[in-house]
Length: 438
Image (cartoon, rainbow, N blue to C red):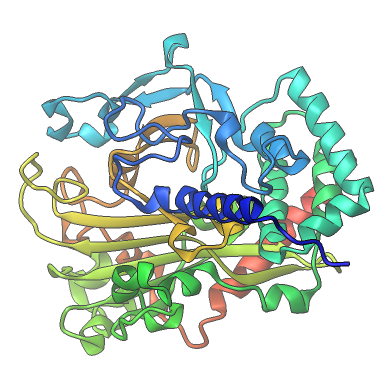
């Protein structure tokens, strides 16, 4: 017999659904409206987690096993090795060399880092966290009901697998807690999906771009990603460790657009350069643009890496001007380069409303960066400007686009699958390393 709601029950159900939608929309509202997970724009720790317990990426129940496991691995209270002085307010940040100014971290700099984003803060685990993680991982491996519940949401299952493999890679990298690395590996394989399922995953970026909430972003992204800009062309290139899928478990694609069209873009690529430009790179004009998109590489049920359609990270870049470095140069880098950064939110994907799938990162939001070297607490403005700036660099002609360095070998993509295939090969190296850990 079908159960029926009472009138009061129906009203309560509608109210709770409205609250769910409101909770999802908060991250994409102006920065003054916060969702309780991160410090707001007026706080001196803007963008950093405010409460670990507020992160519930995989289930609506806060203490669900998958949420607890996520918080153990992806949120960490630690002292950064370095602190970029750009996190401190003051006009001095816009003087020559500001991007490199930093100091050693001290006990007073101990903070909660990480959360539902792209950057993993894991450096170490307490003995209690090791025990708790081990118990939760064994439960995930043994509990068919828990796995079935997760696998019913394929996109979330792939994200959870990604979280486990990223944690395993990090522990291998830092040489700590090798006893739980095999557990992380086994748990990741226990929630693997068939290759056909991975290939048919819904791309949250395309869902957002097709929604009214993604209208502005769609105008800035290439048609190949579901956007509306036909002038952006994908290029292959030799890239740094920052985009090595053995470390990130992400494929990455770069698209470029010249303000004068595709022929002008082709004339700037290394194959077409001659003379001094072939050694140093081209002169990049104001209005030149780039888009970087990264997506998940999963491991299928047969243990093979598969590049999935699930986009995890989107960045846009534009050379807006070549004015001097100054507070009055209101670009992202304060010396002419503008960025847009969006990161997939597991919690938003779980709730299912496209407007909340991605969080826009603001220039002065803070995070813990460990892409190169040791863990550094700085802002996205400071971190991005390390590689993308005009001031204090021997390559101002490149306009902050290192992809145009001649040795990067940028060339028009022929199939669009080149970088995905490379990423699968790189992830296989990680799987081979993990298989060797006993």
